[in-house]
Image (cartoon, rainbow, N blue to C red; front, side, top):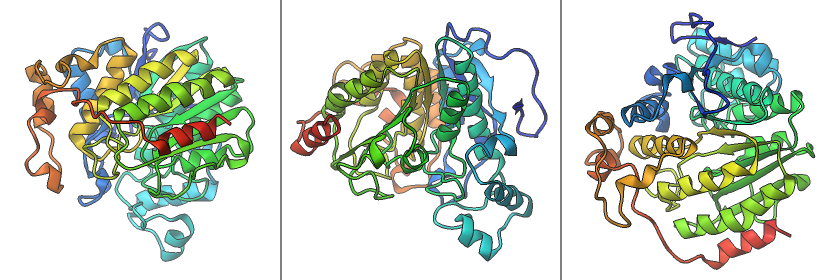
Length: 398
């Protein structure tokens, strides 16, 4: 049984969570993200989930009855996908604050961007717990929408940390849905990096289709043109400077028909926002408006919908993008801050205060532009739909 925990490890109230669900979307979060970082120089040294929830609250978009404190997944629940020895190693790393060389080598802990930090077990177990709980809630209802921005750790492997990911919460969520008889499931990944861990986990599952839109040639180097991973995956590697018009083209000409063909009982949508033009970890060029349009278009295609986060390494871009996703899920218009190309309607003072309080130890954070504080929506990043984009769409529809 999942038990919700506060940051101090104590169980939270047993009161029924989010009584408005499934009539209204649910937002899952935790205070652990407000204080936990991977290290001062790590890309995940920034606040993301806490600033997103703060911004949503400041915008007046969150009814307290729509919010759930994320549970902490138990080792047994994590072992539905992950190797028990690996789970034990993560727990020991948190207790000891270090790992032995043999453990580092075997499980990829403490190297390659996967540091040992004070909450190395609790933080990823909290995001996994949130996604598992979301899947259970969706499985027990005929439909509904849950947003868990802390999720989306799509690189995690059964017995290794990878790409800043320790436990693979999308895999655990999908397995939970399948265990409850919810099938087929479609997983769509919009992160700049290929969703390799999820694709590998469901290589032999005929009732799960994984779709990944990611930067061509970007780490981890998988998800190549034409790669279908045995038939249950579709990969759309896109070129640098990928623009809003190109994502719109992919959504309407590839993602929508692929999802509709499967008629999924559930859709899991990974919304990593490192594909945004303002993110330092890719060379793609999207505005947050394009991400919001993709979410709005895909949501009606399945009765049960879990929206998770993922990458995103500019604290202002992440908070604004994920807050806007919550707005889309609740039928608010996150684009009201702009009028076409012009930024005409500033955010309310409380929302601007949330953004001005953020800091980023990065060259782009030394003198951030005013629109990162004052407006929710980016200016559109328009452009032509180039031949490589048309080619990947044609390929996945064959």
